[in-house]
Image (cartoon, rainbow, N blue to C red):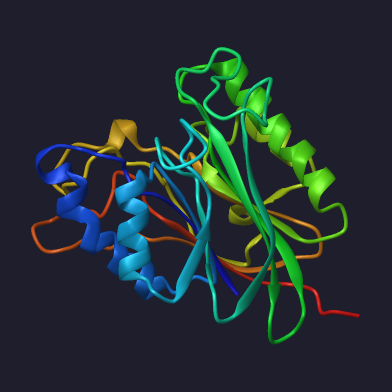
Length: 261
């Protein structure tokens, strides 16, 4: 199966405007054909665009500001004909994770994590996909947010494989990254025998923009449990007019789940 993480760039102006890029985003996901994918910076109109443009998928997730439709989603999409949704939910990266719209610790923004517990119809195999967007300024919030998701994974799926995707706003040498690893997750980028590696954030949406100083690895797909990672790919395709679909490259991982015993 294939799992994707994609920061869509919430708004933007001019060539960065989401309405200019929305068909590119839908096309990028459609070509990659992930079984499940997590999106970040997806406002309600983005969610509706993905639902309309990718009718084979259903999603779980809520707007971070009110637990309904207001604010950015960290939604998880899945192929509805291939998987059965067994459980789902959202929690906020704050001292009160069950209360919508609360900024945690020193965060600049409200942050949410959504998850889907899924069962593959053909095999009965089960797994949980977590997806989030860590804060971009508050270091305590980044660290505590990573700790919270790792702890939730232990509670919600102690014996099941799990994926953890998202824009973490930190590089692999950071404490929040190490916290995720210490929580039992592995970075698919490092364990895939076949990789197409490189930065995941490039800032610009035009190929001709100067991006080198801003490029970094901040988007991830982590795996937990008996998961065999086959390939890791950072998708860098562009579209007519020298446009990228977003200021982040989507990450696509191919993997195998353990058989049902």
